[in-house]
Length: 102
Image (cartoon, rainbow, N blue to C red; front, side):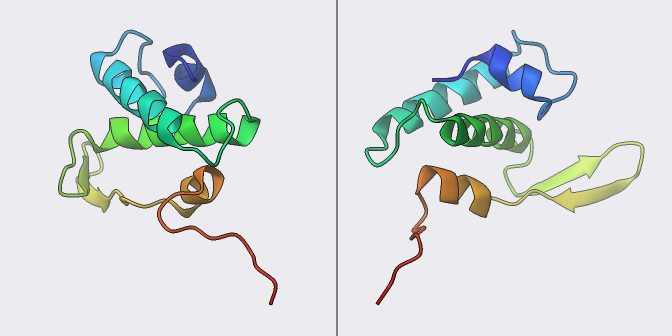
């Protein structure tokens, strides 16, 4: 289980306070989701890192439901991907299958 402090200290969401309501909502979702995964140990460091990454991704997507995020001063827009293979690999989700022999 990760905390808002873990996410803020990670640097994945710079400038976001620990009390940010959107962060706390994303954190509740991710901690609940991680708890449903039977094939992983939520205390392993790579799982905690993936949970932090997933929390940051969900927090960033809150204003980009269509997958487009505007970059204010730059005047452009960028695509926010729905899928991250690193998170899928660490959490063993989204159809990820480890290497197999034979």
